[in-house]
Image 1 (cartoon, rainbow, N blue to C red):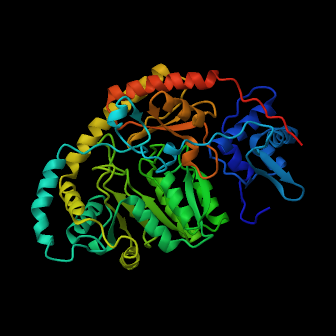
Image 2: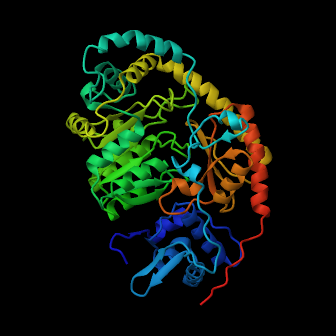
Image 3: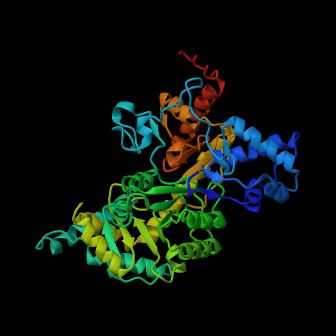
Amino acid sequence: MSTNMRYVNGTQLARLLGDVPQERPYYLAMARAVRALVLDGRLALRTRLPAERDLAAALGVSRTTVTAAYDRLRDEGYVESRRGAGSWTALPPTTMTGPAPRPVPARTRGGAGLSFGMAHAPAADAGFIDLGCATPGVPSIFDEAVAAAVAELPRYTCGPGYEPAGLVTLREAIADRYARRGVPTRPDQIVVTTGAQHALTLLAHLMVDPGTPVMVERPTYPHALDALRRAGARLVPVGVNEGWDVELAAGSMRQAAVRLAYTIADFHNPTGRLMGEEDRAAFIDAARRADALVVADETFAELAHDLEEEPVPPMAAFDTGGRVITIGSASKLMWGGMRIGWIRATAPLARRLTVAREATDIASPVIDQLIVRELMGRIEEVRAERARDLLRSRDALAAALRELLSSWDFVLPDGGMSLWARLGAPVSTPLAEAAERLGVRIVPGPVFGADGVLEDYVRLPYVLPPGTLREAAERLARAFAEVRSAPPARPLPAYV
């Protein structure tokens, strides 16, 4: 058994299980509850389970009941055991005698197909609806911002045309925005990047060596996983489907000796959840005690649906030692076509990042930076427009799902751009395949995880107009009915 294996004690697992249905036999209900924790990512794979005696005491049941539940989970492949080493969570192996795993369609994995990520269908397929991309079109004041940026451009054409740290005027605007959100920031703490993905890739390149343990959420942004994997990180997933369990996160940081923790605390992608103030403070404290840095992805932070609601302070507001590194982006709030993001860090780290980025792209486009600078000056107008449009589309999609797919479960987010829907069955990959045949693209749950779970979830962005989302829901209902009515895959005979 790996020395890096994590563990939960009896009290922690009892808290995760919550109220196990009081059906008989009880051990089957307990086994199903543990299996659900594994499949939705709240209980990480290769997590050592508590001793039967300890879990029995925490749940107030007999040891025999826990033993029977563990035995059932072992039979199903969700628990493995070894004498003297205990029991730990697992996934059933794939063998030639069972149905082969379905591949994720290339266009839903990200970047593998020419039409992936298109918010609107090509002219040859005008009826196609793409729910694979959580990015809206430009705000109504975009043309005015472009005109103002073009008028400003001649001031910059006499020089070389690139500044590796970003235009001073934009870094000042970003620093001022952080100060208004409660985090005093100097322009020399800001590095402008070519989008948030470039920001994360740059951080991974500079701060992650092969084998470095990095804590990630499950589910999380798929391209963040890609960037960390390419840097050689050893991913340590922590489930957030039901919100953040800071105690378990702290245990993972400590047990896995995590050096970096990547989190989307603001309108999480894909769940839409918002981490509360107490959890933020506890999360940063856990990182401090584990001597880990925190990378806070704030790509969706400005996308609250109710602008009258008091905002939660940024993660950096709870940091007193330069431990939080923040990633921001203009792509979700302003427009995905402007590849402008930024990193907020300590001034020394910002200088290191500036030097490091010269080996990749040298600097971000001047005109795009000037457009973002203009939009930052009118950011409250942009936020108000986004809140109005996203709220209308969110409610339309939710109403359609409740009417047409009432068995699906989801929590209405207070911000962000997507619903994270639980299907009630592990069929998200075949559902994505069936939906694409009916002219709608969705991204299945496993794409958002690091280890093959989340097959009973799909992400559904609501950036398109209400009527389009209604049509998408109708097609998804047909696709879901098709998948649920399909006969189970027949086992393949084994030939020797």
